[in-house]
Length: 249
Ligand code: AP5
Image 1 (cartoon, rainbow, N blue to C red):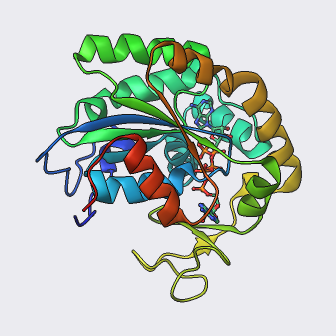
Image 2: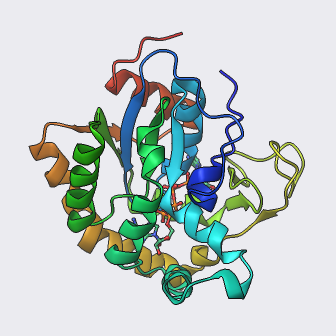
């Protein structure tokens, strides 16, 4: 399935129009992807979006897209969010939740959704439950990717991200066809500011303190599917599909 959706509503806000919204044939998968920073959630989300037709909704991508807005178009809350992200700290629940609520049409998208990087705290997860209830949709599963910390740090050290479409590469494990250039849109590949060693340390500590408790939260609801994130991206994709009981092609 071709994945040409530009996620405009999610990345730019409700005034935008998606260029190619998911077609909505077959099951609309509604998933949360959990796991430590750098475990490979964004990479798997891209592949799952192609395979399942669901839209990849990353809160980190929204903040990174907002950073390229002219200063006069950024609210004080958005400037504070961008500063938090650069330090590797979490953006406040209030800011994240208002951003997600503004984009709630994406949660009702006929193709389904893959939430990546949200929720990240128990209050965010509770708020998501309330929002989905209001919208009349439910989660199918929460995929928790698991990997030892040394492997995660190696993944973050080699990451390159497209400055335009946000596609994710790795210098050795997932290189682009042409060095420094995105395969999808030709955009420039850059190193994320929060992939500096001091920001990585803060992000890992924050994950342990604020996000890891979500594993128990979703296990208690019977939604958790833990998947090993070791091996190639294709192996992890197959493990994920099998955990979701999606039939092989
Ligand atoms: P966000 O953008 O969500 O970042 P993150 O959670 O830190 O996750 P990453 O994007 O770093 O990693 P990933 O798991 O997606 O891994 P990837 O696929 O890129 O958030 C950024 C910031 O925004 C936060 O720190 C916070 O400030 C703020 N924020 C966002 N949401 C928030 C929220 N809800 N609440 C509060 N604050 C929020 O893979 C990593 C690398 O590994 C890549 O180079 C990839 O090519 C490579 N790789 C992937 N798979 C493999 C493999 N199998 N083998 C080898 N290499 C691989």
